[in-house]
View (cartoon, rainbow, N blue to C red):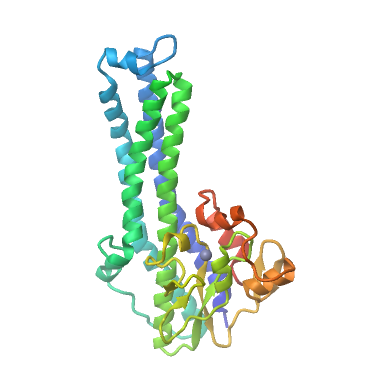
Length: 343
Ligand SMILES: [Zn+2]
């Protein structure tokens, strides 16, 4: 009989993450277009107003052009911000649905019976990801902040460049950095919320399976590497309390699954944890790690004691502790697929 853990590892997570990547690519494409257009516009402005390759606020003031140029650049950025927001908002319900379908398929294959699980209606799914919902307040705030910061960064780059009398090349670099910040923010939101859609969809499917007579239970699943937050390292292998339907984190926060929208940003951003479902009789026997390859199934703390010889994992240093939290460079997909997901 096919094994749920193998399906999960080989099929569900990679398929889900490649779908998430499609939305990430849409965001990147929108920002690439904006960058090309903004640089093109700046080139025209420099050709027209720069003196000896340098453009300053007073050069533009002479022609009363500053406000118009700022507006012009923001007008070019606007479609990228809008496309970013649109990609994020359309990604979440779609990712949730796909998570449900993949998990249902894997459970059908594992149990050998067609469970016929019911997916929530489009309206229920839309409500789950609505920014009007109180549980989604951090998500709503991050969208708002993303829009404000994106505009501010472009304005700052332009203002500072002109105040310092920068060349076209230097100005282009600054504008490119400003656009990159905006792009990274959009990607971080879609990844954070996309992972929430994955775990929310999985969790819902697991409950449906239980209601349909499948015997099993839910378990927190962290990545076995040194970038995992200490709080989540401690959660690895913990069973969900089926009375309350919640996991309790070391800092006291409770959550139905990793990435849940009601968790604080400290417990969500760039988190790579998943919720696993142990079908009775099909509990995982192995885990794959980046450092050691395939090892017998063990929890994070057992792994840490065995391979990093010491007590409980308390975070290697402030910097590594913060990596799962804040690094925009986290290769989320690769980490989950290749390094730490349990087999
Ligand atoms: Zn985590």
